[in-house]
Length: 320
Image (cartoon, rainbow, N blue to C red; front, side):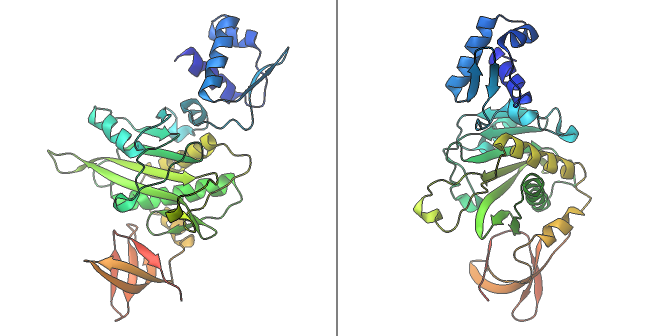
């Protein structure tokens, strides 16, 4: 680990404590001048570091850059050892994860970015990803044969996001089938799950779960006004929230055959019992959402009284 990253890890681990240059130098086995240069390099990257005579160094409470060190220190036992890669900018974290998998990376890992130039939502839509305003990350996992149903994993990820937000804030978000998280009527999070196939066996080799959370309110493109919203948590860093989302996902991914998380999904659904519209074979239809099956599919009752299960696609909630 570079000196700059080692310093950041120390500062993240002691956010409420001043760390003297001398103690940092002794712990890291470098000179005080090297520590000073490393601190200045971190400041140049955008980290807000407080310092003063006879006080040492400390990350400002408002310092909130995403970092591998900041995320990793909050990972629970079930996610410890997860490799975390944080980019200042990338086209999309899902694309970055795909490139890493194509290059032969086989362990579970996380890719996060401060900014995406080509963030994607469902059906190729652009996911607006302004710098320092959200969490844009992709978890790559290898669930094993028979456990990698993308709909189930997306459903589990939605529950994980809601559980993380409820644990760390007083917010009460809701889930819009299958992959969107809403708060007070506005979308604050989207999830895009993609399966990576093994060409030789025709089976799912890896699954990448892309998650975009709007954390801070920013000026939105016109097409998102009235649609997107922001979490706006108080006193919560993005690193802490990102880590807790990963903790929750990894806990569920440890045994995807256990479907008990679906009770949370159903309890937090904003569509069950509602009239919805959906598209099937190019034709728009209306129905009533009546349940969530054991694989995360949406059970609907059509106007003719017949029932079916939606396993993909998009829905919109209709006014009563």
